[in-house]
Amino acid sequence: MFLTVSCAQSVPVTVVPELTYEHIAPVSLNVASFEVLDEYQPSLALPYVEHTLTTPLYTAVARMAQKAFFAKESPDQNYTLRLIIKEASIRLDTEHKVNKLSQLFGDQAFKKYHGRIHMYLEVIDTDGTVIGSGNSVVTRNLKMPEHYSLMQRNKMFFLMSEDMTRDLHQALDKLMKQKFSILLG
Image (cartoon, rainbow, N blue to C red; front, side):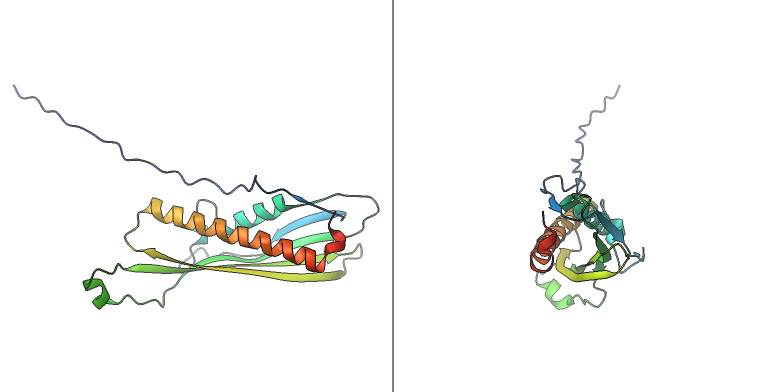
């Protein structure tokens, strides 16, 4: 009679959390309404990868904007503040060439990614006329070793998205104070 014994070790699973922005204290606006519009159309193909994230970058940007501001909806206000997502992309740098000689000496192969968020802000009166506008653009670059597992890549993209949306939040806050301070409540 033979007895076979084996030890199994479970693989640790790391779950990347969703970007919810519950920690953001919303800014009250003296406007009748506040809207977030997503005009960005992701290509859903390489070299763009933002759609593969646990929370796609365009979804994270919309969530952050919705958490960051709210309309007081006072009856004496006639303006609408509209935030328009023009771009929320992460692109693989396909032009990046790996130096094979440097790999022989222990350098790792890596991939480069470029993230870009472009948000357009406009204030509209009751007639639909834009009476004020501004732009905010945030960029980040990421260099990631090619040997990273799917979980490691997801975590790196999560951190990149978190950093980019934090930068965007700060940029929008600054833009509001510079150009639209009269609307801040």
